[in-house]
Length: 273
Image 1: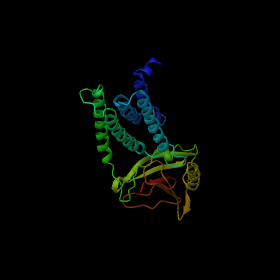
Image 2: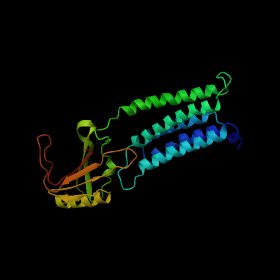
Image 3: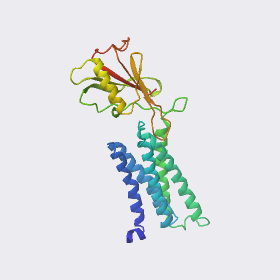
Image 4: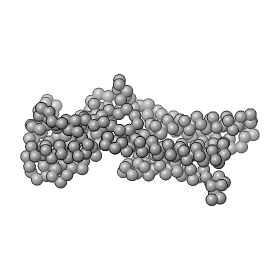
């Protein structure tokens, strides 16, 4: 309690920012979790250590920052029946939160220290260190995010993930999977999941089992001429392209670049076009 009443509240709130590591860890993404922990600590820590407004305001805003970052992650990554967006979806918003935090630190200094000389203001070194660290991280992250380009309609894209198809039921066996078997313009990828029956059943039975399985995972597959196809919208906060899936009910057509697979093998195609 004494730590909270003194300067210890800064440590506790900063730990809350680093504690955001548990969110990506819950998704089984340890590398992304490191990014969340470091960035959360820097953004929240920059405010609580650089703010000049005192414990009440500093602690309240710091806790609010943690809550906003956690809520952004939840909205981005728990979209219900939609495809979950990639981690860049929530991180781009986190970057914007960091920019807002930097602006708040500058306004906070101007409001609290208005009319007070720079050399006479206690804690200015801490403010400078906080602002410099946060500004540097935001600049570096902004350069990386700036490399991500959108198409002419402003949509972002990402390749299909294994969990959009897998795991398969026991009646089916995965032969191979490639989430970017064929690359197109603008970073487009077409995924291929090669599947066969686990008990040696024919193609018709394999297709029926696959369609039932994929529909249970949220894919609204509809029959068409020699195919089943459908698309799923992507959740998240930003504008992401939907994914389109199709598979052939009969022997697949061959092309110059892609020979037809064996008849008893069914290939699931997913495109992010």
